[in-house]
Amino acid sequence: MKEKIHPKLVPCKIICNGEVVMHTYSTKPEIHVEVWSGNHPFWTGQQRFVDTEGRVEKFQKKFGGSYGKKAAKKQ
Image (cartoon, rainbow, N blue to C red; front, side):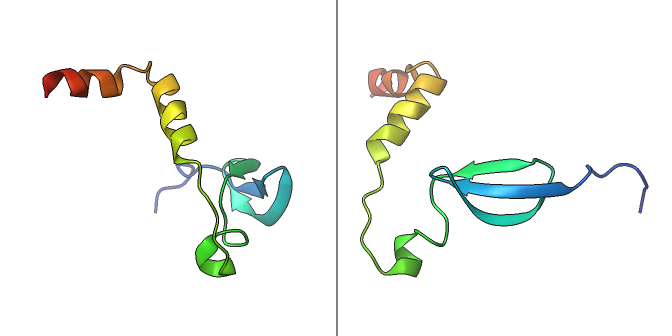
């Protein structure tokens, strides 16, 4: 293997809803997540509403809101 081509691993905190839920190693010191195994419906057995509309709005904001409009005009 070639030396000095891999990124350096550092201790990392996985954060969900402002709470540290896990410690691991990564190339980043912190990773923020919305869902993890401790609050995912599959693992907890509880029903949870996922804000899909908020995710779409976040996508539209990130890409200028023109993504869905162009597709609608083509149809």
